[in-house]
Length: 311
Image (cartoon, rainbow, N blue to C red):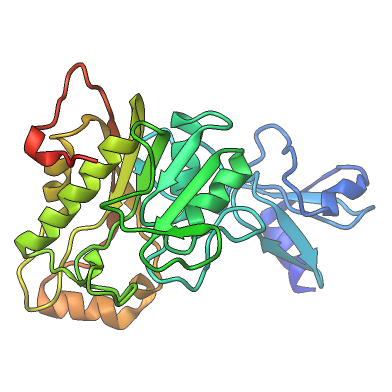
């Protein structure tokens, strides 16, 4: 009864036939100039909203369960601006990496990078692989993923320090890295872990310079890499523009291609008390991550010799 009343107020019925694929839960074509299409059982009519704002991507999969429409994740598309956003940590119906792993990279970020800067069968390296998000995206896109970590989270990740990878020179077609943003999270707990180094100390930047030098060594000329990072702030301590600092180090090794801001959707940003505290304390919560996209070009940029390690 409530639905019928709402329909009479806001909806116009549109004849649509009885194609059973409409209830399959897959992405579907929408009629011209229709802002939102809804699923309906076979034999009923499909409805559209009139004079209402678009409330979700019309290509997103939806399912009808107990007469209720459940919206799924929107279809993946290549991001076309320098502001990237996707409403979920994972894309599709599966999970990339482990959804319980703290500090995991949103998989759509890696998906976009690999679609733009790699081809099928290219070798993609992640020196700080975490729970294996990069490796799972590589499988989806038919790339050869190679993951390394001080504390391997699963069997297909090789134990190694990002400052000394067991790889030959110029053996990789793309490198993605999501390093620790100071000491905000506990990773391996190992003394040599960069996550134990405060971003206010020189030791952190010395370690990250070694990591970036190693990325330069294993990456082929004219190929790309990307570093995903957030600035560092702890209440009561000075703000650290970590993104700017790491971008400056990257500039000694690579040619900048672009800088992307990725909107953060972590759980802490949904807590009202965190926002109240930010207002009361006159500080800001981290709302985005930097994504620095760089290209190795030995003709235009040659790192100072003291930056490069000898193998």
